[in-house]
Length: 81
Image (cartoon, rainbow, N blue to C red):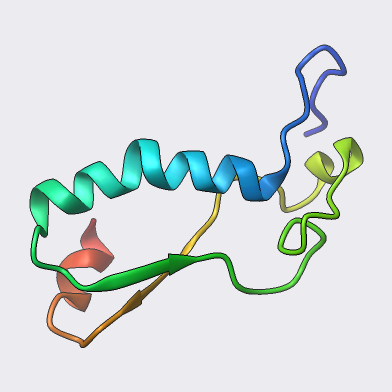
């Protein structure tokens, strides 16, 4: 679904960073305070390298992140999260 032109464009990396720090990280800190992880954005697409444009919003665009865990201890719990 294309976004209307009057909605300001934000790069996917910026959107993903805001999503992680504003929503996901506080939840992880609250429910898994001792969890050791790294959050990043891996994969393909113009948004991964910061080359996305307004037109990118019509295909596979949105907040995303990859969570790399120190070990497998909480994987089952996080999948439900």
